[in-house]
Length: 170
Image (cartoon, rainbow, N blue to C red; front, side, top):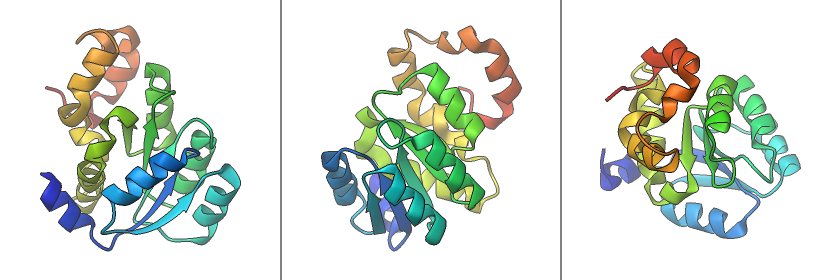
């Protein structure tokens, strides 16, 4: 899916974006301008919105807003949720996000492509597929570079083998 198709697909979708950095919220607002957005900059505000609102998808920062705790609330409410991070960009946080029920794990370095990632998640769910199915296709190369080569997932071989069917393997 390209940017134009993703933007068209996301038009009118209700999205909650949560980050403690105002500039990130501004960037997300610009990238998702066709959507109906709610924004929060702290755990308390985000938690209240999650408990009282309805969202087609939720975007959570990990650090600064207790993103993993918010993920638990979002998953309980049945909201597809993506984790967006710069500082928690580790294999451990990737696994924690996956096991916590996140639908995707996005580095802030790739924020410009968030419409495509969100559309991937929503399309996968709509078609009864696992949202992680496009993750390696879209972001595998980034994580290969970030984590030191194509064998980075070998370090946590058990995790990857147990969850292999949920990921798209190149």
